[in-house]
Image (cartoon, rainbow, N blue to C red; front, top):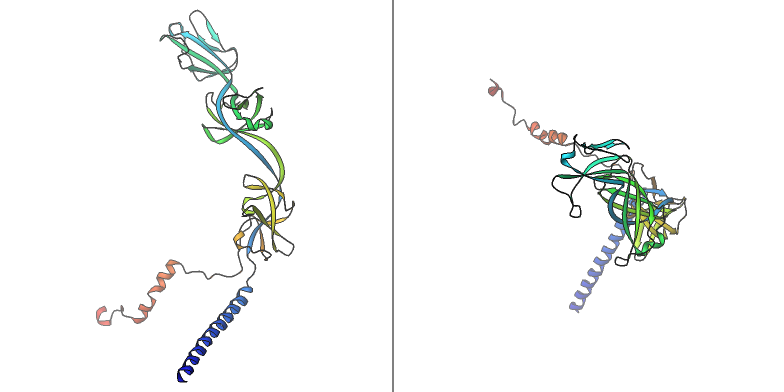
Length: 331
């Protein structure tokens, strides 16, 4: 009997403790729920969905070819005056004066010295002079066969030149071959580049980016999308500043923006940044993109500066007067 009473008491105490823990947790939870429910909604960067330029690109490379070029082989003993290499000349200007004749420029260009190659028969007593008109640069490139339906004369082209990494030159597709190269399964095309300032030198390595399928479609920042498996979502902000999680169909990504095919409309207010702070159907405090972000109105206690901390660190020692000199020590 005593043993049964003891067991009952232990069970009762155990359940009493469990009930106390549950009640305490509930009370604490309600306390913090009320406390945090008074906080204002988080400040979130928003923007508006609007139409932007999207495009596809074909990347390739090639070598710079001058618009016109002319080479001359002359014997060194025939040269009367020193040749001014790397000099611009006009049509009709003197290139080199020889003993029995003179060579004049058939077109505007730059005088250069051409290096000998195995296919050019010259003696040690000869030099090769070339005149290059690089006011226009051509670049012959090959494009994979799969892009043939998109290639058209006049397509815009962006060019990067290794000698000028920061600048992007503009060009266009000038001509297209009438047949596919069988061994590479590619289409030869020629790019035309305006080079009036002579910034691109003939023979330079060029990075080519052919722009095609340029279009003006609805876009949103890359940072506004939420990817969940095969689905993509964007938070659309309604009139009550509620973030509505909206499914969208997207196209290509270009220059930090994603193309929106379906799901939202032009002019819709959407969350641009800070997706982790947003809850579906939760209220937010919209901040226009570019405005100063203020996450909440809660004032943070400013920490004292290091100098102030050092000043007040040993104030308690001064109060003890343990470092104060006695009258006898002063004398």
